[in-house]
Structures are given as structure tokens and as C-alpha cells.
Image (cartoon, rainbow, N blue to C red; front, side):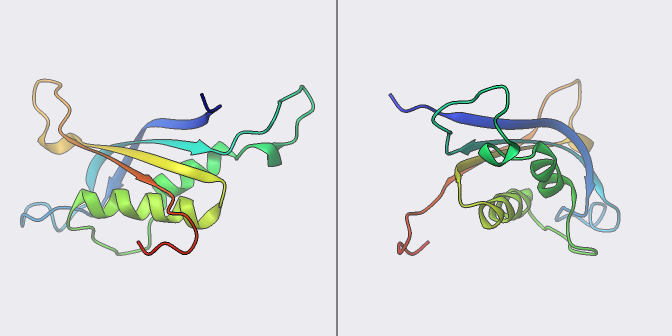
Length: 128
């Protein structure tokens, strides 16, 4: 078995420009976004282990809540890909990232309608 460290930032409420229908394209849509990011694990963690042996959770939160001004993501798949790409570009230690997005505006009776996307880091030299 391989040791694994998964950092999690879940249930962020974010308003994002997304959607394909005319009623969706003018105003930001409310979404719940969750991110689980697998990180290369340190050999051991002690009480004085520095943050550099892990990742600041706020960087993960920023990737899931801060988007380029005025960008409209037609599909939430593109939004999930954007979040994953940003995290992979910010830290080479991420080995895989999972993003879950729930579209709150179309949910009725408490159901969760959305997607979960997982991408694994491609080995160096392998085309995407």
C-alpha cells in the first residue's frame, strides 16, 4: 500500500458565471464546490513539521473561489478543469485532484445535481 495525504476543502458556496441557457448567462449561478487534493506525503509529521511539508488549505480554497474577472464557464466541466489546472500548476506535489460541483439553482427537494471530476498528474514528458 502507498501512503496518501488528501487535503480537503468542501462545501464552498461560490457564485460563478456559468450555464448555457439564456436565463443562466447574465448572472452568476450559485454552486457548492468541494476539492480533494492528493499530495506527496512527507516521510513523517512531527509537532514542529513546517507548512512546507504540506500545503496551505487557503491556496486550495482560493483556486476554488477566485476566477478571472468576467470569464463565463459555459459548462461546469470547464470550471472543474480550471480549478484542477490551477492547482497542478501551483504545486508539483499534487498527484491527483478531485473537484465536485453542485448546481444549487436547479436543485429541488434537496437533491444534489452536478459532477465530480478527477484528474491525475501526467508523468513528465507525457502529452495530455
